[in-house]
Image 1 (tube, one colour):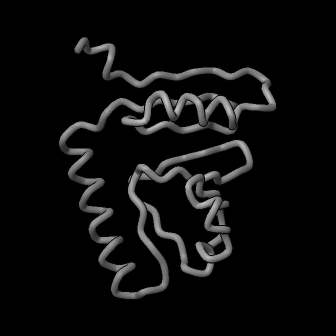
Image 2: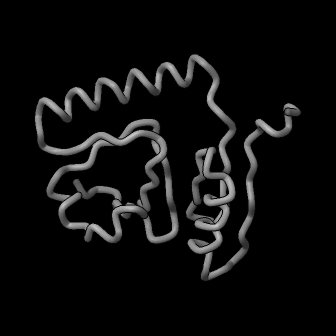
Length: 121
């Protein structure tokens, strides 16, 4: 594998109404990588994390998951979860928490493409 194969890739989808569909297609092609969609319609295919970054993400997720399990008020998610924080922006934080109330408001059929909006718990 060449070093270029591990670099971050940015795909610009200029002024298209179907940027979410293009995003879904790119995410399917790069299923083994973290893929995000910016508000400007740029699709980011992230490079794999280094050891330190992966360790820190794991620690954050572990602590968040423990807290979520103890409190039973919501669920913790890893970086594989994509969250639409605006209608056209999908981000994948290293660790995220979503309240049970918010999760229950999303129909089960839509939970494979989770749509959480900023400010909603």
